[in-house]
Amino acid sequence: MELDEALERIAVIHRHIVRGQIFRGYRAVPTFLSGLMAFVACAVQGIWLDNDVTGCLVLWCSAAAASIAIVALEMIIRCKRSGSTLERDMTIGAAEQFVPTIAAGALLTFVIAQFTPEQVWLLPGLWAIMFSLGIFASRRMLPRAVTLVGAHYLITGLLCVAFGHDTTFFPAWTMAVTFGAGQFLAAGVLYWSLERNHARPQHADNP
Image (cartoon, rainbow, N blue to C red; front, side, top):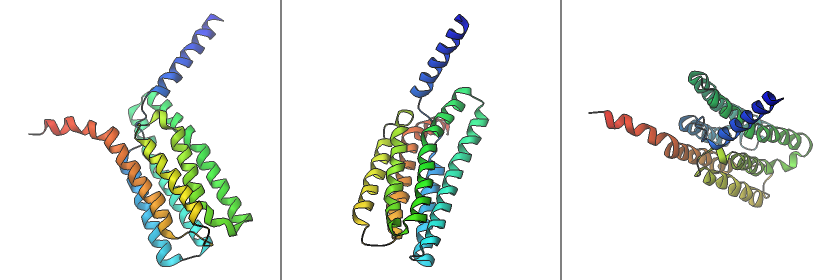
């Protein structure tokens, strides 16, 4: 009984340590690439798809899936290379913060597209608001400046809902301002808060 109690206390302490650490698994380059992908998708929509609802939904769902895959793959590779149990647990914890948001966003997209297609214009705003909730839920594991990224997604999402009702579908620039700019901002925060300081000693050693 005492052994079980001790193990439980150790597990609780370990969870507190994980929550108190800054998670460094999100990197600036993959995040920047996801923002770049958003702008490319905007160009594809504006040039070739126009207001093709089905085509645009497939485009944006594919872009989102590719962005998630890039970030997740980079995190998994870094985690395996480090071999650290703490980093593995922090990676799992970070994923647990965002998986419900991603799953809910996918289900919401399916329901609106299938049952209320006339309301599809709401999707950019709802996606951004849900993404902001995932960021705010993860803020304890991320640099403080990430709050700016969450605020960006929340504000732009609300603006999309407030001013997007005059069209049956969302224009490409809406996604560019919301997700393209948002991911560029997130990449800047990650680099400035986490990666810039680690690069300094290497530059200092150079002749």
